[in-house]
Amino acid sequence: MPAPGGPPGSGEAHDGEDRGGLWAAFGGLTTRGRSFLAAGVAATACAYVLGQEDLLRVGLLLAVLPVVCVVVLHLTRHRVTGSRRLAPARVPASAEARVSLRVDNVSRLPTGLLMLQDRVPYVLGPRPRFVLDRMEPGGRREVSYRVRADLRGRYPLGPLQLRLTDPFGMCELTRGFSAYDTLTVVPRVDRLPPVRLGGEAAGHGDGRYRVLALAGEDDVIPRGYRHGDDLRRVHWRSTARYGELMVRREERPRRAHCTVLLDTRAVAYEGAGPGSPFEWAVSGAASVASHLMERGFTVRLLTDTGSALPGHDAASGGYASSSPDPSGAAGLMLDALAVIDHSEGTGLSPAHDALLGTGGEGLLVAFLGDLDESQAALAARMRPRGGTAVAFVLPTATWSGAPEGDPAHHEADERLRVLRDAGWTALPVAPGTPLPDLWRLAGAPGPAGGPYGAGPYGVGPYGVPGAALADGYGAGGYDTATAPGAAADGTAAGPARAAAAGGGATGSGAPGGGAGGRA
Image (cartoon, rainbow, N blue to C red; front, top):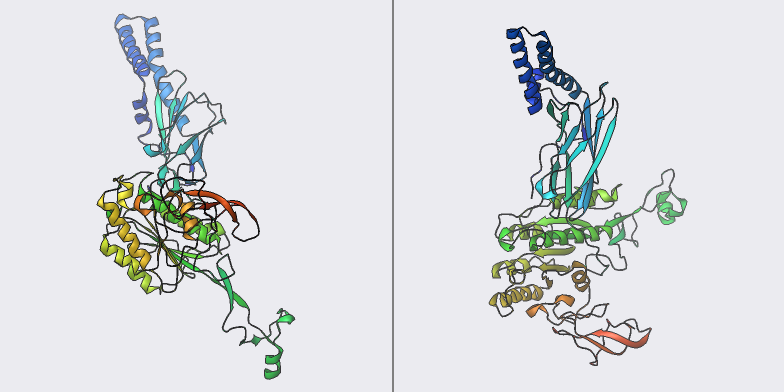
């Protein structure tokens, strides 16, 4: 990830410093200017020796013209300002941002030809250069360009450089501005379908439920009446007991909690770049966290190092969307994920200890890299007691393109079985697998005690039997059958498209049916 460059600029670059003064400006003489100056000095010397007054006039003209151009250009450079506007300052990976540059001539003299150049990291594309025509006194010129990054991170834009030339082309001076902006490229966030997972109260899809502040509804602890309280909340039984008006305590919302565990171990992933498994895991963590925050969850982002990402709300213990600015928490979370990088750790023990320290309540969603036998057993023990745990595992054997008969596939399958035996909903991830499909599968009910497959993109040994989805796809492949059947709610009947229990080929016409059929 690109390291953030110094303190962020305000986006406005004012007059720069005068480095070296007027004498340094003579270093900007072009080849033409130096030729004129040399010819003028030579002509003046010859006129003095030969006594030719006309040649002396020509020599003085040739020598004075470059000097006058340097002086005028030096004075003009202090009266040119530049500014930059970045919109938006935060973009998802592979999206474009527009950078607008503006140059103002605040002097009383016109400028010559201007060349504008902005410094950008090579990841964002070639360095933009613009040629601006002569600007009149008080004039303004605006240009813009677009930048795009396929890899998340923070990229400095600037400083802006301006090259000024005089109308005769005798001198060129480069002008630098100190301010710059920072473009934040955050992970891509996929829109996830609403599914039913653990960690949320029954009957409340937004992950919230309400409780009395200190007691249940059958044992209300009242408080004294205050001016402005609704009289409909007066608790008459307590009023008769205490001899003064008493009201029921207000209910307060309690949020469902979720922990998103992101495995950042360098030894657990292979490859780099936008299509690497680590970038898929970071994007998946951002998508799940954003989705759950929209549903009212308080989300804590945890890495394998056992430390939470910066920006958590200390009161709620995670990223919560109940702040006055709902996008503020999501923005902080995405900013933290934009710069996350591999860790040097080799195990998940710190994350295991951190989960135990918080009691392990609520929903746990983990994005795990390649696991060996010991790490799989350790991850299996992370599952919260009585809670739901979903793991998206990215085996190296799948992402490295190993053949199906390779023993690495069998070992990866054994690691998944360890997680499933411990109560995890473990889903393997293959290259190009859309997260929304896996997320839908994670919330689909499977057979009693049965494992969960990899959804419609099951690959090799990972396409094990599992649950039929609402869209009619099976848990282990694309095997489909067309047969008369009823809809899942029993309200309609007719030819339904149902999913076979598993497999790796496409078939049709076989009798079959299931809750995932379409009427």
